[in-house]
Amino acid sequence: SAVISQKPSRDICQRGTSLTIQCQVDSQVTMMFWYRQQPGQSLTLIATANQGSEATYESGFVIDKFPISRPNLTFSTLTVSNMSPEDSSIYLCSVGDRADGELFFGEGSRLTVL
Amino acid sequence: AQSVTQLGSHVSVSEGALVLLRCNYSSSVPPYLFWYVQYPNQGLQLLLKYTTGATLVKGINGFEAEFKKSETSFHLTKPSAHMSDAAEYFCAARGDTGRRALTFGSGTRLQVQP
Image (cartoon, rainbow over all chains, first blue to last red; front, side, top):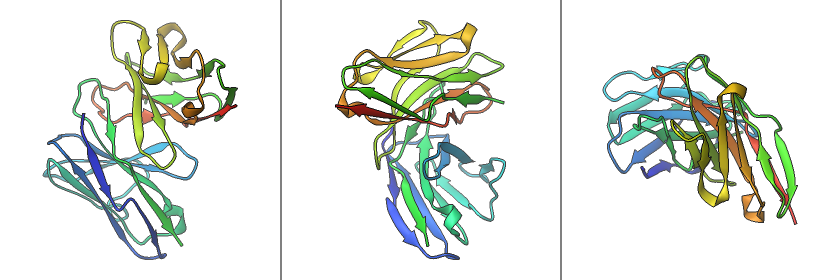
């Protein structure tokens, strides 16, 4: 298993600003993913964070809006840029190198945009 | 593309009653299937998973699920509900071996009445 720490755990932000969420893992992992959970909704994959290369984004998500860094095998950041109220969500970092695909999740970062 | 369908966004049972949460998947390849639980203001915790082998899978907290290929289902059950089982439950799947991320269902909120 892996222990994942996310910062901040929650924040309230103003429209038009940007926020960077950090994800720290207690062990080296190859596969790291960022998910979004909008209020009352399920989890939607934003991107796969690749160490040493650009992130791979899912349809509907773009790098300009959600830039991701992955400087090493234990750390990643997700930035939510030029925020609007529609970006109010829980953002979850997850990791998983197991062959069966099991993912481990951080506690999430709850973002409210006013 | 992989998809996961959870029937019933809300399920309410009485304490001590049977819990049945439904999940169906679509996949062109044999899937890996998961059930996660999310308690309020927390991240996701794995309840159980099916990879290969025995189709009846036992998980934590008395939950179990049965993989039925003919029905493309992976329903979650617990013989006797407890108040502490009240949470959001997500079914997830990984079907494409080239895609490491999980696809999640829409979630089912379980309420347990005293």
